[in-house]
Every structure is written in C-alpha cells, then in structure tokens.
Image (tube, rainbow, N blue to C red; front, side, top):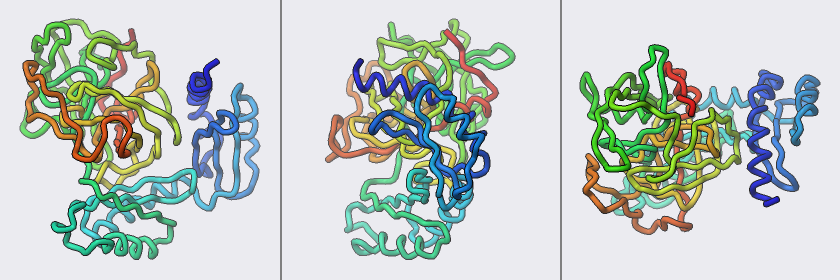
Length: 378
C-alpha cells in the first residue's frame, strides 16, 4: 500500500478518537498532534508526571497507535488563556499586526509579527528593531513565547471556497431546523448595512446568476462565519474542489497539529494543501482569541474572493477560509463570469513550491453551531 495513503487512512481513523482522548485527558491536556516517524501515531501530551490510567486505557483500546506523554510544564488551556493578554501587550509594544497561537508540540506560545513595511523605507523602526522590541516584551511574560518576524504584508481577509459568490466563495451546503437550505461562507463577506452585501452565486454549468439571502453572520475576533439561504433549486450535499468536480459531504473531521488539510478557491480557481500548525490560533493579524486553525504550506494560491471556501480532508468538512498571508493579487470585486483573468501570484511568491504561505481557517464545528445549521448530507 502506498505509504502516504496508509498515513492518511490512519490519521482519519485516529481523528475520530480525538474527542474521547481529550475527555480522558481532562484538565491536564497539554497538547495533541500527529507524528509519522517511525509510524503514524497520535501523541497526547499531559501536564505533570502523574499517570492518567483512564487515558492510558483509552489509548490502548485504539486500533492505531496512540502515545501518551507526560511532563509538560503547562496545559493547553493555560496557554490559550494567556493569548488575550499576550496579544494585547505585544500590539501595544510594537503597533504592528500579529497573530498568536499555541505550539502544542513545544508547549509554548508563538507570536508572528507582520512588518507592514517589508520595505524598510516605509518602516517606523530601523531594520531588526521590531524583532528586538517583540523579544523584549515576550521576555517579560510568565509564559514562554517564541517570536517570529514575518516580512510580508499582514493577512488578507478574502480567500477561497466552493461556488463563486459576488465577492466571496461558498463553503458547505447546510440546512437549518426550519428546512431553509443554503451555503456557508465567511462572516466578513457580509459587509455593512442591514441586509449585507449581495452574495448571489454563479451556476458552474452555464455561469447563470442565482440570488441568495443572508440568514446570519458573525465576524468577531473569535469567529468569522455566515450563511445564506437559496430558493432557486434544491441544495445538494456536495462541495466543490474544482469548477467541474464536487465531493459528497460525509461529515465533519477533527484535526490535530501536523494534520494535512486541503482547500479550494473559486476566485483563484486553484486548490492546495497545507499542514496544521495550530488549532488554537488568533485570527490572522488581528484578534485575541485562540479559536482558529493555522495552516502553513507552499503551493497555496490564495486571492481576494476565496473567503469562506471549504477546507477539508477527503470528503469531510474541516472549516471555511478566513484569510492568508502573503496575499495574491486579483481582480476588483465583484467577480463577473465574463472576466477571464484569474488571480496572479504575489511578487516574489511562487504559486507552486516557493515561499511558504500561512492560512487561517474558521473551524466548521463551532461555525455550524453558531449558525444553528447542519451539513446537508448527500
């Protein structure tokens, strides 16, 4: 059997055990991540050295390898709880966009500072000063902090999905308890006004335009999700991974650090995959809550208008696209079907290979709950 396929299958089985393992770990949970060397396994890290027999029994029952590790200095909850204070103090000290996430493998917080000036001629500080200021601020924290300076522009809030909307992308087909059906997208696509920005969508077969109505939208530092209802035709339990192919929505997938997840963007007409770096990250460049998934990888071409699009593993929903950095350029909104130019790669960033990009994902589990909707099954 192909090694990569075997790893994906093992991760898929192990992902179903994550909620139970987290419950067994209890308040001492320090981290949870995948490793593939020497073989695929799920690692559960606990604070302190006192054995947790319930967790060990749960790990032993798994048909795949679950490894319990002790000795972490602090719990994941303690690190997540520290994020708001760290984000606030760091932004006050350096006055630059940044994001904060939990590094579960190393049991620390990581602060990524975005130097808006990558071009030093526009910088308010001399080269290297931002890093020094951030490191000094981080040293005063009681929580270990790693500082990373990113010399790319701050994240964009517009990126990928399933169907082409006026200015964003739809994610997954959903239905509320009243029977209204439609699609998820990013909350920031709502815009302003009492009815929100128009977000009708285009039918891929003939690019005809269909209307949609906003039902709910949340765009805060801790959540970025919305959904629209449609009436022109039945809603199928499918999500697009290209303009000509779609996958059945078989359910929702848990993810852990080092997992691989993929996305599709209607605006960029491009798909790509990346590795989960954190499941407790702040919103890209802003926000004080560790509620987003942070993904890194190359080969991801992300454009304005891809926001709200699906992130997935095989046929399972993981989340909707919130934002990315660096940002690829694109056409002005609204996207029209007779426009033939796709988004172009940002200067100095290769679409395939090349520089690593970071993406932020709104977890679909919390998003569906906040919208009070459920996935439409095939």
